Image (cartoon, rainbow, N blue to C red; front, side, top):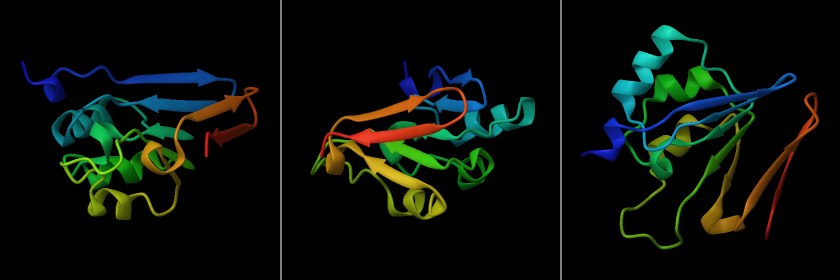
Length: 117
C-alpha cells in the first residue's frame, strides 16, 4: 500500500481558525480535494514532510498564514523541497528540524504558534 495514496486529510475549525492536516497526500489527491471543497486554512501541516510531491496550486489555494513542516534534521530525502518552500513564501514556515516541537494555540479568533527552540 502506498501511504501517499491513502492519507487522511482533516480540516479542523474552531471559531474562525481553520487548520488543515494533510498527511502524506500528493498532488493528485490535493487537486481533487480542491475541486470538492474550499481548502483555505490559517494553519497548514505541509504534506509529506514538504516533499516535491505537493501541488503548488494546492499550497496557493490553502494560503496559510502558518505552514508547519514535520521533518527530521539532515534527512536523506532532502526534505523539505525548495520548490515546496518557494510555494509557501507568503506563510510563516515553522520546521521541526529547525525549531523542535511546534504548538499552535487558538481561542477561536486569534491564533499563536510557539516552538521548542
